[in-house]
Amino acid sequence: MATAIREFDPKDMAQHPDSYFRREYVWELPVRISHWVNAACLIVLFLTGIYISHPILAPSGEAYKNFVMGRVRQIHFISAMVFMVSFLVRVYWFWMGNNYSRSGFPFVWRPSWWRDLFRQATDYLKLERGHVHLGHNSLGGLVYTLFVVALGWAQMFTGFALYSETNPSGFFGRVFGWVLPFLGGSFQARMWHHTFAWGFVVFAILHVYVILYDSTQYGNGLITSIISGYKFYKRGDLKHDRWVS
Amino acid sequence: MENPPLRPSTYQVLEQHGVDRRSFIKFCTAMAAALGLDATMVPQIVEALENKPRIPVIWLHGLECTCCSESFIRSSHPIAQDIILNMISLDYDDTLQAAAGFQVEDIRKRIMKEYPGEYLLAVEGNAPTKDGGVYCTVGGETFLSILEETAEKAKAIIAWGSCASNGCVQAAKPNPTGAKPIHALLPHKTIINVPGCPPIAEVMTGVLTYILTFGQLPELDRIGRPKMFYGQRLHDKCYRRPFFDAGQFVEAWDDEGARKGWCLYKMGCRGPSTYNSCSTFKWNNGVSWPIGSGHGCIGCAENNFWDNGPFYQRLSGIPVPGIDSTPDEVGATLAGAAVIGVGAHFVSSVVRRFGQKPAQPTPDSGDKGRGDV
Image 1 (spheres, one colour):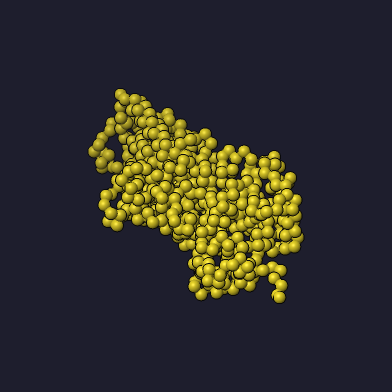
Image 2: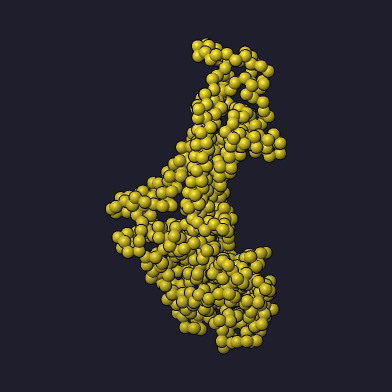
């Protein structure tokens, strides 16, 4: 279909924005809140976690006057609880939200998911602008599923198992205590918890870069969308399976 | 004159050995405290030790160093040498008994025949499984077959020490003899794991006292350890814990913190991941214990402690073949690779765009919504 090419007229765009960009409400409030709470928690969890394993900044004076490690652990545990709630809200919203809340998730039995994964990966590598997605594309969905969902579960299970060690017969011990012998003991569980934490660092690097790249490449308002909830597209942009929108 | 009973109780045997009543009651009280029992339970222990016939025990030695026996016979309670050795009817223990050879094996067979379902099987050490178990043979039979034979009709099985309960050094990499802990060899049996290299003497006697007094096994945790002795980490009762919470750590063996007795966490102390009673009972009659003498815990009561990296390092390497790095090294390498990857992508996208005119938005005429083409 032929589109008449006209000179760009900023005034016209200001007066008729809908004929230039269309916007769609993509990220509902629980998704946006969960995103920022997770981001804040993961930063705090990683930094406090690094301190717990490599305590520097030794305070001077008598032990009774200081509570540095105790306080850092307390912050770590509180952040973990907040993260868990935020994480579970997002998992709940996977089912209850709009279609975008499920977009990109590796529904591996759908050929369309695999097609989109291949297409998006090659588009990024060839530095080309391919299909515009309003929700997550397959590649994004795969990365979020591995680095946030799977790692999130792994960190919660190992973390709460380690947390339960101060009171093995308590609630957390009964629910998560099996993780310790499963991983070969408390020491091994600690080692894995520490290793997995680095996954969030790798994720943060990839995530921030791809968001910046995708947003400039596609002009889809990706960065602001996680604040406002709206993403932008143009006529002709969308031709997709609704599951990988 | 009254004939001596056929199967005397513990107290009757102790009397014969000249232990006075006062020492006996003191031992019972100490045991009640060790088991975490109320003072009102002391009479129950006294009664059990006075009246119940001693449990016949077969004490097997597999691949091990005998440190469990050493710990057990050196139990430092005032009359422990007497009480402990006489508390059970230690009918078969090839290390301690005077008899040797076929005589000894006859005794084992006789106990199994005379007290089926009544005798206690105490296993010190574990069994090699490679090449048909030939790397540990006793009296011409493999230890594996002796263990399986003896376990069949045992009332209960106690796995003494880290060898029997976790595998210990002979099961550490590369485990040339295929040594396996007892619970892996007898998967369908209830086994009390009493780990430690060696276990604390008071813990060993405590377990026996409990079984004798109540006629049942103590409450066990997920991996078969008695909760009363292995329910908590050293860390949670460590006298250096305030320094941990304060954030004051020993950084080197001769620094100011070491002199002040600060926490040994950064020196690789395994206290935060080791379940045992060392910080409660201590060792050698409560004289001291590793952390008390300024050395970190090496986690000898924990599974796989030989392979958990250097004793003086907080975290071990990743136990994945081919990777010999700590979690931080692996994580930082992956993060660095991610930075290089996105950096390369960024540079190539800038180069690609260089000199290109930025795309201008163009209006469209349609007013259909999402999904049109």
